[in-house]
Image (cartoon, rainbow over all chains, first blue to last red):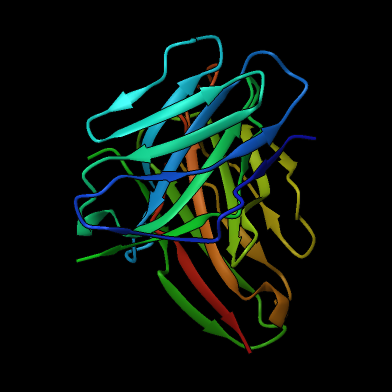
Amino acid sequence: AQTVTQSQPEMSVQEAETVTLSCTYDTSESDYYLFWYKQPPSRQMILVIRQEAYKQQNATENRFSVNFQKAAKSFSLKISDSQLGDAAMYFCAYKNYGQNFVFGPGTRLSVLP
Amino acid sequence: EAQVTQNPRYLITVTGKKLTVTCSQNMNHEYMSWYRQDPGLGLRQIYYSMNVEVTDKGDVPEGYKVSRKEKRNFPLILESPSPNQTSLYFCASSLRDRGSYGYTFGSGTRLTVV
């Protein structure tokens, strides 16, 4: 069974600085998708960024980018120019070509003014 | 607006009193799923449905039931709730494709069983 690990239960970053959230996963499959979801205090789950495993190029969405290392099964999220609105719980998730969607335990990010 | 609607948003109930959390989506998604979120454990899948009348267990199905009589609705039923089912619940849906678009989530239901 696939597992997703986020080794940092909590992180903090100064406003305007850059922070990287770690995620590792375990799978025997070669084709899959990886996601980062943001959950602010409103508890809505918001898709931040996604990555197809067959693509070597790292995904980027404005201030959010990933470092996808397929061989190492690592999928970290980098947030540049951090803003107060980035404070949230962040979940890393793995999805295969079926409907098996597995989430990590989450990392709570605080942004300090 | 394309969305997944969950109700209620908050619910406090007593042990053993049957309850239903409703979930409805207006995107014609084939796939729907229920998750529970607990601190330090992330989201764990309870049940999922690939299409009408097709449901299957996720990782933590004990104590829950679901039904999928219509494509848009996927209610979660707790026949006899217990305190260990106190949690934050999410309904989610997606197209039944290769899954590249991830889920659309509802806004969550905070359930407390006393």
